[in-house]
Image (cartoon, rainbow, N blue to C red; front, top):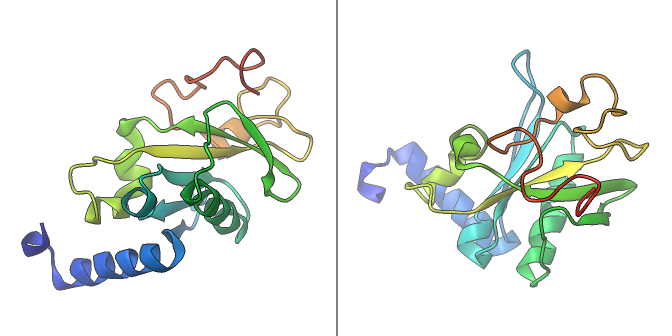
Length: 169
């Protein structure tokens, strides 16, 4: 793989490896634009701890990094993040749940991870946040546009690992 990379890509890959060795994962912030909301994702969690890479979408500046770093730290110490479970201590004042990311979304939301895993042979989860009023993106009482601001990265764009209100939020 390394022979096929440009010098710039090799340097970036080496940076991601160094960051994952030092901090559990590198964190990449992507600014929002007219095409979509901002998002933050990890690079190296799978390589370092064999825990899924993580992405969160639509959070204010800085909040996404705090959330994914807390996830990596805790997952790296063995905490299990079962889809549909809810945490109230990953991001202060915000409920968070986890859903598996469909492979069809990997390149869009985890492009840099392919520098470490060129065949896409890694697992990934989405850290989904509720509103301040504890509404989830798929709920009918969620604010207008919340589901578009925080799209679910499953094949159906709805929770697939649990049934909302039954065995998940």
